[in-house]
Length: 443
Image (cartoon, rainbow, N blue to C red; front, side, top):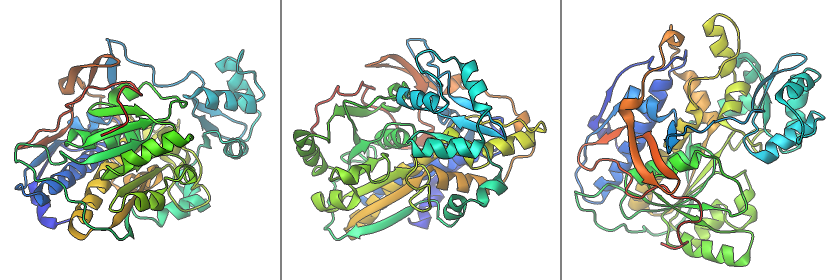
């Protein structure tokens, strides 16, 4: 990306803005500003002058809390069985927000999902060694990780694999002509007219699609009618259309192919190989739509023995050493999470950055492009930022000044407005958040 664009960004504030020994404010601000600046470069390529982008650190961090309410109710973010468990020789964090993950975790403990209480699970986990439960969960397709220190993580094969990777990658995967975008009036947001297909479910991918929508993209969230979602979909669906398409069926694949052939960008966050098995991996999709920008989001990256493992922000914080390090910084050694799911949120904005950067390349050079991002690579980058001395003593701030209310298909939605301030064409959500399947599956 052109270095002169950096002269158009204004960053205010400094860490700590939330209680953490990690530079979570810097991570939020930098990824949000970079994504917004890259989107504005698309506008510049389309004939508009550059515009200033301003991001305040406190506002950016508030946006990355993912806080929202619907009709005055703040959803409970965690299932009662999710969380950190003491084991025979350490700790394990289990993610149970989906019912099938919860039931599988309880069965692995030897408990009946229909009758078990959290106290039963606490007792059962004392009979497990942490790494044994982690490995058994992985074999069963469940989601749990043992607590590690940074040194312990660095000594694992996956830790070494992640350490050798860049923050994200952009690779040309095929030849194609430039897919011309329509000329852009200076009054329009920079991504107006860009069609984005989003096949994601948990926070990072939906955050990326929401950012692209805020900067003007026509984003269609495509959900499978048979898969569950989390309540955060009410917040992360702002600015998007939301359609149901079943890729397991012939008619569904035909419908999706038609959508793909009208798309400029496709973002997917399913387990590695999942969409490829259905005929819509990166190379397959680029063959159907030459010139496509395809963004793949994974938990642990594309390399190493954990590349195919499922994972969520809270689990990576535990496995990669962040929970342990926060406890050490607090002085009591008690493992504790960072104050927001910053790996999800920052990775989401890196999804938007990568998509916009690759789209710039497509507009200038043609070709089909594959962007790969992961929570683990984002975590490695965050770890490399300076630690914040005394950061845990920072009081949790009031985020009310950053909230905005809107009608939605879920009810009255109160959520954090975009923190990236575009001087000429403000970031905004012009479509209300709607439930999955509300929108017809066509552009």
